[in-house]
Image (cartoon, rainbow, N blue to C red; front, top):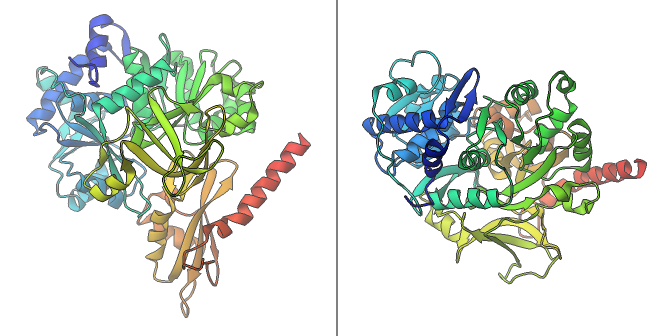
Length: 527
């Protein structure tokens, strides 16, 4: 079988160490031998339920061992995964299902109540599989019953350029785009990350970041390739993380900086034995020196690695290694995204498409084995984003003399709040639908806990009563996920405009950036 095949890790694990524990969830554990058997049986059930080669299968569920089994079973049976963001609203989820014509959907008990409305909004859905404890609701097939009923089937052997997944990410137009990633792309990014030492033999991995995120799926692939024990928490909560580390001897976990800060600040950590923890991977944003200092004090000896990525790159683009986090290292590097991953090239371009000199800001582009195949059913957007094999990110950046990548601006106006990407145009589209709103602009403003929060500047319609902030948030929650809704709102008579009539968001951000910088300078001088 070819190497660039995502199920190869299961074949290797079942042959080399069939009795080694592969997954732990609650009181339940599965060996690598059991995992391969369950995956092949579930794949048989999916095929019997109508999954054809290349069909998309949605997964709308919290983290679990069944989530892991489902991903591999879809690939084993020749299908394509469509992991659904569990924080999206029903209209957002339905759009992603319709857009790539998802016919099979796997849900757990937390999201089974959404199925009726999803089916109404996404008529392409034909089959629902319930992947949880307890009996499956009426009209749904049971995950474990399918495994018990069907005999194992041969691996379909999908590999190389075969489509492995459609991963939806927000867009500047306010409509999500389905990023098409291949077996070779996902496999190659994971192998290159392993070569960089992101995980190692004998590690015990913990999945606590949401498994619908490509970051955690990449972590899952790395851990499976290494044959690691993988503990799984249904969601992030400090006490769940502490308990899992103690129970399973976790050495390696993936978080965003906000989560790291919450763990370090939680006084309950002293109630648990956490000495097994040796390595924290993080992404979503750079880490502040204050958070790094607290982490070092609370988890002595724990190494940190930043994995900066894009969905369009399967996902890892660059890595900031543990030695770059050492107290003796150049502190400026903490603000960087590290150096390119093995097999990934990065360049920075000026508006005419010429490569910029070192330390000059421009739009950065990346290419390598993980580059996407394009956006699902969006040829124009795909052509704009893919140029001669380079993925155009739309983000402003520069590369220093040592090859470290620094992201300095988000040309796409993306806001990163608690590790989640929020696109301002999407929020603006929701706010603009309020009958009393004449114009609006959404920006990210600095926040000590979340990195950034969503802030809306609104011009009310003349002659109408201006809505208050709570009314705006309530309106938005009916259209978009709660975490995308503005946490703060201000009302103005007009928005600042350029000569071309474009909103000058730089002017809207300026007071908050200045305030943040002043606060940072004050902290530094008082230290």
